[in-house]
Length: 355
Image (tube, rainbow, N blue to C red; front, side):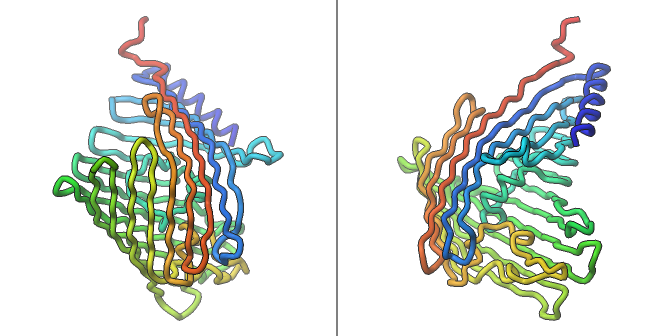
């Protein structure tokens, strides 16, 4: 990976010196702490994720709206004896103007503008998977947004099952305080090269309607549904259709907040313990959502109390939260802390360069 990164970097520098309009650096350093105390729940294990992530990139912008960016995604787990626990290349093309944007390659997940709840991605999944491998297109206007993305995160081989996901998200505002939208995920969990006939489909639809307003505190209230369709093609059982409803509430001021998410419905992970043809349970390889959506007690409530603010012209962000998770039978606890800093200086601009 290191040799490929150096070659790409040298090519980029050669291109910029010849005809560059703008050369820029975009660096992000973040520390993440996620402690889960789930022992006895039958849903997830008690564990602590504590890691630092660095994503340095160098970009070349031309014709105002087009960019080519190369860099790396580096992750170090605290306590690990390895120099680096994860290292991946970041390399993508980007088009961006005041309303439309597109990316192709391996790019940061923060480029996505869609609204994806924990019914799609858990906190731990986002820590370890901060990039998208594929393509994305988006529209952002004064009253709405729309997005489509394809994330290819599993290479067909003897060691890895072929996996990809299509994401759709869109929404808009109305009547000053109202908003509505929907997000959709189609996940294709396919075969390894050593076997066939073990494809799993996992579809999630999350329509919602809500209101945001201020009355000393800032309020966000949202009602939605989580509708899934799941199928394991190695059996003849057909589609499974677990679904439920969600009610979300948040009250905040001065960076302090309390939020509550109530889900009532069927378990959204009916195939979690199913064993594939390779002898491995689907488990987290198939499901990337918060594991409590898999409760068998038909109710899940998450209450979070925390602090979230940005500083230094929004270049530094801090978040700390304690969450109480109720699975319909017992209460469990989660603690989250995140600190991140970004810098994006312009290194060279052809228009302002003094010859």
